[in-house]
Amino acid sequence: MLNISHKSYLFYGLIVFSLLFFSYFCAQGLQEIYNLQKEKEKIELNNQKLREENMRLTNQIKKIKNNDREEIEKIVREELGLIKKGEIVYKFVE
Image (tube, rainbow, N blue to C red; front, top):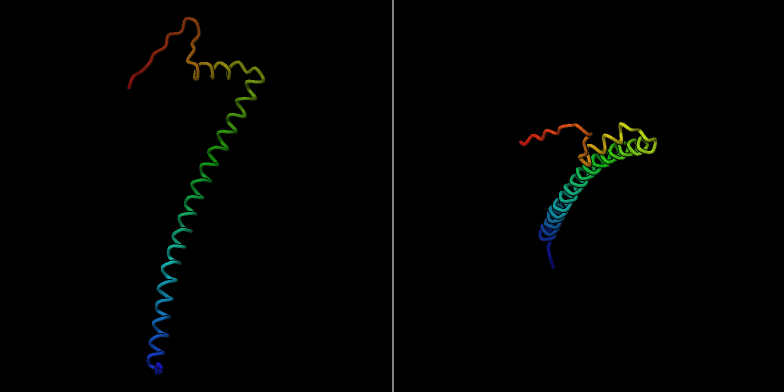
């Protein structure tokens, strides 16, 4: 049978082990929470950029549906690379 001093050593050892165990896993848990918060911030920023892009595209669609000649010409020039008759295109190589 263990005497009082052995029981107290066992008790204090168990407390130290428990503290080390929980501090290790809690630290990893805190790190995981921090990482998840950073990831959430990145996702929210990306979502905001996508919302702005959607608004821009929605406005562009409305202009095209209303036969906005300037918007249609802009899209044709930028995306299809078309030019008006008599225009000269200068391409600058970097």
